[in-house]
Length: 490
Image 1 (cartoon, helix red, strand yellow):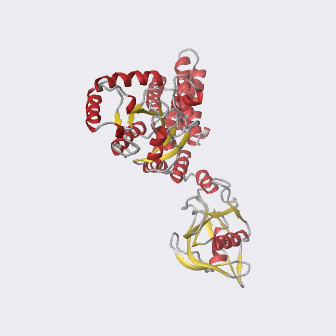
Image 2 (image 1 turned 135 degrees about the vertical axis):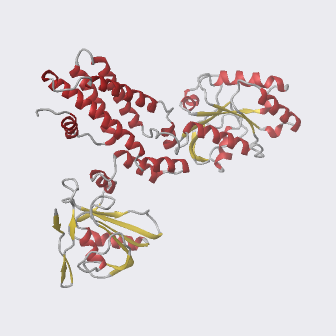
Image 3 (image 1 turned 90 degrees about the vertical axis):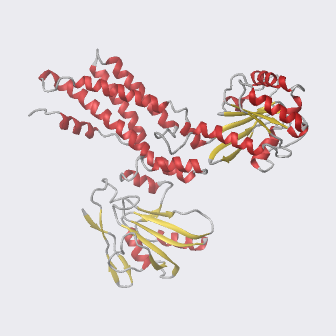
């Protein structure tokens, strides 16, 4: 189906660009044309203004002074950008034409690559607003149109959002992998298998009495449901690695008062993020900062000192931590190094009896004689039953690099390698819907032998839960499978 875009008059020369919308979802061809600054705000060398919708060609004709024929697709042309009302030249830049459906949104689209000064950007946006049928885009509207047009699945949209907000190398890799569709393909495969299961069960309910259904159909469904349950259960047992990587590993610095926790925080941040004082209990609230540890995101929190009397404020952060850095003042250790291990084990049990992920940091090693420090290091290395131990001095930075290496190793283990293995869960909503899907498949197993209608409802609920992740569940697809797989009514 073709239609003509609105007429743009430049001088006395009218023009119409033809645009084909074959294959687009109903309603996209009639959508409003939107525009927005797609590059970052602020002064920059080049800014990109994106236009999408049926009036894109009109904007290109009015503002770039092109002839009746559209420019070659995806080819940059250097043009004067003019105001369609006053004919004033606003800037000189590149224009690119993306005809439907081969664009990000699936619609006709135009990009204006202009100089990044605020005055230039404002003038071009105001000029676009004067073109009939155009309006500023709402937040996320370009990506929403790409989703509606089938250019991106919902998991790919979320991956795109994560890529835009990625602050570390590992986050970038995970987001790019999700945006490429790998996670979406996994869920779509599960959805396709569930659709087939549902189609077979419903066909058996409707037509088994007429002996039009092959024997063994339900046994095939039983096997498929069991296999899916096992795969979903394995997918859910990922120790939340993808979610940790996306949101940041929660690392808490804890320990007795005046052990040097705030000094450690400031050393890692390389700035005075927390008050440092010889007075015990200087830190009264949780101080939190974001760090990049070897490409992995860390949310580092310095708690108030943990004392014998339980304080909810002091312990709240530790209880929800993925990893706890237990800081101990070396001067408080027993003088006899052979007793240090037992002292530290008792210290951990007393302060943090419910925590499991530790990194033990012995601070203020500069206060120890070198011979005693080396003897302590050797003694703790040979003792089993202790978490990894790092001897450091925040005053002299001695041992700091070894500590950061150990911290990076623990954080990497908690997040996993975003490029290896099966794609991992990255969103809490994915986990919730998959848990509902698993429970619904258990409903199928529960009712399989006594009420096939309830069993089928379990499969339908499982399919709906997956559809809430991918954003696509169509009744027509179930019917297509029924008519494809069964010779009904020949």
